[in-house]
Image (cartoon, rainbow, N blue to C red; front, side, top):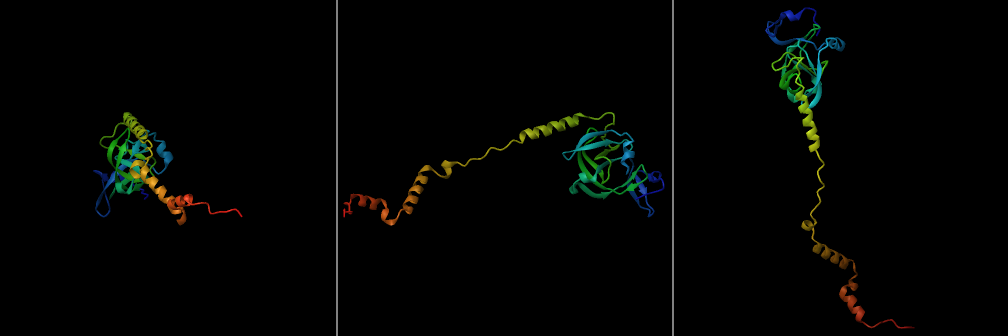
Amino acid sequence: MEVTDDLQSEVEGGMLKLASGKSVPVMTNCAALRDPEKTRSLGLPVLKGELGGREVDVMRDTGCEGVVVRKQLVDASQLTGECCLLLRIDNTALLPEKAVISLRTPFLSGEVKTLCIPDAICDVIVGNVEGARSPKDPDMSVMVGAATTRAQGKREAVTKPLRVPDIERHASVRPLRRWGARTRERRMPADLTTNSLATATDAPNRFEND
């Protein structure tokens, strides 16, 4: 939604009064401009962080009053069902959804309330919220610990050994022998059993020379 007037001056106590007389919560001075080149020209610091276990780029914006995240990185289960008006410094306004996400970054870590924007210039934008560190004082040890945790997980993900059935438990040698004997007997003709073979051996030779 394009606006031509300076809405920033209409915001009081984090609320913007509408023509209907109602007031809505608003976040102002967010540097997440629609134009990526203009945003980059601001020279805001960007470091690596984690969002829900995924590596993301994190921008620290001292001119923003909240936290903004790229909507594609947020699961539907993390959305709160609420919205908040967002005024950007290029005098454009958005009505993004709110979400609660798990962050681990050099600027801010923990469960964080954020606004979800599809076209955010950076994966995560950390503004002036409680617990946010100064752009000049990021805590890089947070990411060192995250890298160590990932490495440990890879080492522990070893291949499970192949499970070999217990032959003694499932089939002993003696039953297998009995099974083989029964199979051979079934394959013999009725007149060639063990007893008949013995009788035939003891009988005199029935063949005579011509």
